[in-house]
Image 1 (spheres, rainbow, N blue to C red):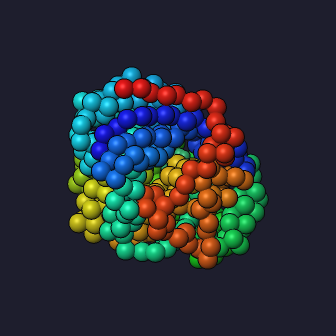
Image 2: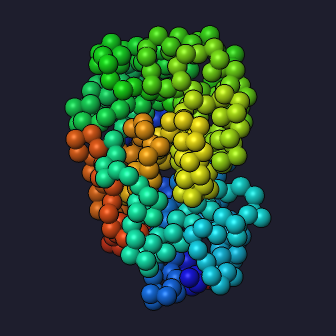
Image 3: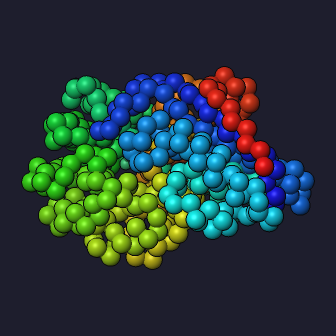
Length: 371
Ligand code: OSB
Ligand code: MG
């Protein structure tokens, strides 16, 4: 395949309610989609990608405007020069650019989609996915009060979500967790701190052991893999890493150090779906559970995530929820959670179509990148 045209569509989609984490209060989904045009053996094909970078560099060092700039100035020129571009070599071509994994992932995703479409192959079949549906969990933001936390989670349970993940931060941790356990009994329940604590909080965090959580996600900083290993030795709650796992190498280090009993796999965070697959395979070879994280993706990323989560190592319910968890209106056909599951798309590519009308409605900026 030869890359001929690249357009970045920045969109801002209102959220149904503010999503509050230990690091940000999000009221809209601000991201860019990659539309990439290729000449292929089966003619001209378009592939779509989505960057999971957020508006501000608070989850990781990446952010939306920076991603668009590095794509225009550094990544796109490399790919425009490749005669035989394949998804499997995008990471290799881009290897001299340090970091910028979310930007690289969005480009690899667009190349991958075009490649799959030209072969009339679904992402699930490309990967060797083994499930037609995946259990659907929901990530619940920090609420104003314990009562609100219980009410909001009660709503998601009534909808049928298979697992609850509650965001925590210092000052909003033990009490809401205790209340949710008291109210809803034996539900699948886990927490995510988004790096809000330090090792000095060990004794406090250990109080969470009383609530039979499935896991605690990323209590300490991104760079603190060794410190997570120390914390894991004092807590009985299984340790799960998100922010710290930026590559298969980081995953290998975390496993070797005992820093993670479980890994949250997010393709954007690690440079793409193909690196995410390597982490899945590595974890599986170690008999370690993984689950699929989310970054409040539009229907496009959500569809691709559902296919990824159909691989056999994804043994815990992930954060692949229905489109309506975050959006009144999505830019693709809605991803639907029903009976606690999301269906794995079957169509070629990621199996969903970006609706140009809806895209236009939410577009805030268009960046055409020319060879
Ligand atoms: O830590 O998993 C996280 C959203 C943005 C950034 C980081 C995280 C999240 C979520 C939402 O928890 C997961 C979802 O998309 O449902
Ligand atoms: Mg997380």
